[in-house]
Amino acid sequence: MKVIRKNSIITKIFAITSALLLISTLLIYVIIVFIMPVYYTSYKKDTINKGLNQLVDQLKSVPLNDSLGVIQDFAVKNNVDIQVTDFQKESFASIKNSNVIFGPYKSEEKTPNKSNTNTAVTTIAENNNLTSFSIKKEVKFKNDSSTYYLCLSASLQPVSEASKVLLKLLPYILICIFFIAMIGAVLYAKIISKPLIEINKIAKEMVNMNFALKCKVGSKDEIGELAQSLNVLTVNLEKSMNDLKESNKKLKSDIDREREIEGRRREFLATISHELKTPITVLKGQLEGMIYNVGIYKDREKYLKHSLQVVDNMGELVIEFLNICKMESMNFMKNSIDLQDICLNKMVNNCIQNISFMAEQKNIKLISNIEDNVIAQVNGKLIYKAFSNIIGNAITHSPNNSVVKVNLKKVDSTIIFEVKNSDVRIEEKEILKIFDAFYRVDKSRSRKTGGSGLGLYIVKMVFELHNIKYKIENTDDGVKFNAIFTTYNI
Image 1 (tube, rainbow, N blue to C red):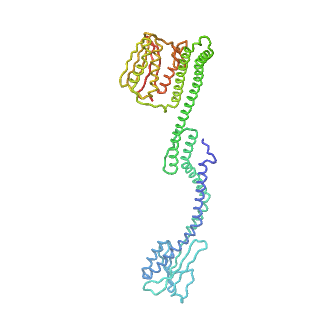
Image 2 (cartoon, helix red, strand yellow; image 1 turned 135 degrees about the vertical axis):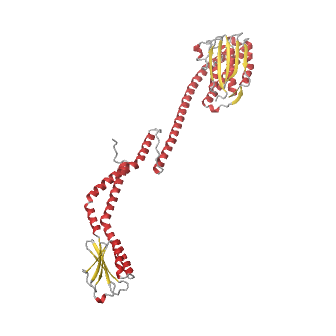
Image 3 (cartoon, rainbow, N blue to C red; image 1 turned 45 degrees about the vertical axis):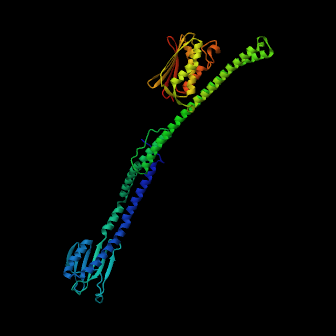
């Protein structure tokens, strides 16, 4: 059973409604019992007196013998008793209970003096208990010089008795009023408060971030408008909360990504320091040896060239570092990348042409199968760098007299770029690390055979920046690099 709180809206509406019903009903009862008899008496007197005056004027044009019908109609219409008296002849006609009676007249009123017979007489007598009243008026008839009197008597007994009965019925009436007021107040309170309680329930659910419930709009009044407004607020608030969640999720993702990049940057800087430390140490030793003419370093011409080569290698390494830092920034802010429709088949052909001298030095056969009109939306400079690194890496790690194949083709809505080199195999555990920065498959870690270790790391960054899927895998006759472009990658 639901418990109704003391300060709930149902309680307030019930209290106010029941009080109004009780007060208004009691007020109506008081008006009926005490005020209505007085008003009715005054109204009855005024109405009868006015009608009697009109009757007197009408009888002036009616003969005495025809007047009783007119008087009888007036008595029936107004529910009164009328006596017609002629004091000179001491005879009368009485109309009582709509019946006409002839007989001797015995008046309780004093007989007017003969000297006053030509003067109109109007007399009103009232009972002290307001149970009846009487009116006496002088009247004349047509073709009759005699003076007559209309004695009218009206009873107020029914109204007086009704007031007394109502007073005796007061306890029962109060009980009925009380129960009617209570039942009416309960029904009214439930009807009025039901939509408000429903709205309050929905509002509480909104506080708990539950936007699934909606108010049922069953009316077009202010409560219905409030329910409709709450439904609109629920939809807007749910949308705002979802947008906020998405923004927070994206912000969290960006923060996590920034932390990841920051961690990789610190690791990268540590690796850079290690990579630069060796050539700097070599360069410093060679320069000191030449300055002090120590041992083999007396041949300055030879070791100056060695030192220049070391400096050139360091310069290339620094340029690669800067490119990587730039791409890491782009990877964090992908919208900053400049994309254009690029003809990939021309780009791959240019890469092969520019790098073919490396294949010639190792007597490697470079075979290309490039389809025409292969276009994708990419950053030309970055993709060219990736293609050059992939093809160059394949040539660098292929033995002399081997074969390197480069393929570019369209398959449905995708573009597939493949580079295969024969007579080579990479251990599976090495494949998982091959795209890491400064990682070299060559265990000697020599730059002459293994490079700087940044080539495939740059490829990884470029392809991830373009959302391009890529992988390296062993095949039956060698190693294959595979990259899948869509027509528009971002």
